[in-house]
Amino acid sequence: MDFEFSEEQRAVRDTVAAFAAREIAPHAAEWDRDHAFPAGVFRKLADIGIMGMTVSERYGGAALDSISTVLAIEELSRADAGVGVTVSVHTGLTSRIIDGFASEALKQRYLPLMCSGEWLGGFALTEAESGSDAASLRTRAIRRGDDYVLDGTKQWVTNGGHAKAFIVFARTGGPGPKGISAFLVDRDTRGLSLGRVTDKLGIRSSDTTDLVFESATVPAEALLGEENGGYRIALATLGDGRLGIAAQAVGILAACLDTSSAYAKDRFQFGRPIGAFQGVAFKVADMAVDLDAARMLLYRAAWLKDQGVTSIDASSKAKLFASTAARRHAAECIQILGGYGYTTEFPAERYYRDSKITEIYEGTSEVQRIVIARELIGRLDERTAKDRPPPRVTDGAVPQPQPANRT
Image (cartoon, rainbow, N blue to C red; front, top):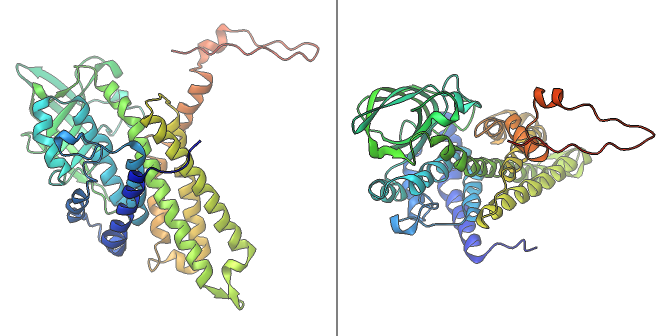
């Protein structure tokens, strides 16, 4: 087993870390307070290749591997989780889907400008009554000649107020996942308008809006992949999205450890640094252990993707553990700082607010547990229980396991 990063991966990590320390961290508190979207930062990130890090080189991208990608998002999120999720959605979802499923003409039109940071991407799947149950979405796309006409509303679209290119999922067929298609929709499409801007608990430097489609007409070439094949596209990219959010959570957790360790050494009470007291020292130790564990799960999932190994639950394990640890230790970071931790004078309260969303979007923690459990025991329902007799145990014998009912 080799736990060393390659020279290129180290270079990506160190370059982004230096950029974040210089261009992001000094302004993160102000952006959070003002709910400001730092548009200029993304042009600068494009100059070091980050805005096109998942895109093929032929379109101006850097074509980085998955480990390099999560390292970049981790370092960005360590400075500001809002910037981290903006880049994650732009690169890990929107640009990646265009590169993988759009026509050559659309790739040539969109990807170079997205890699340059001039255009941002957004991902529109969620609706008011379609969250974890994405297959129940109601937005319609009706074919009319050489066009599709979209009607409906999308909710909580990251980058929605600033993106030029949106990946939009709409129903072109019957109910359920087999009736959903994916489209590349331009911001300037007639019939597309911005809805409400979401005022959020955390990640306030990211932009979150609703999109409203009222007879919005897009050309047939905007269809990505096959008609009614959009749900497969969504599933194919969910793993990438979950890796991005896991990396965001790891970055927040790393920032918690940085802040907690420094304060434990600098803050004196009862004549000595508070880190000398076991009650504080153990909190810092536990934080460090969980950070290492979260990183290992994240890097392993990214490594499996780079090896072409199909592991449905690897990204779910990484996201579940990292998000839970980030939220828990953000609370401990506040506790270590005491009264100061509860104020905006220190970043601990921002870490706490930012961390919570990582347990919700790209699949809640409950959904991640469903994914992990299904990989272990299959899909079990009431019919399975009724159709199979209970195991019989006699004379201390251990019942033989029943084969899982997989679909």
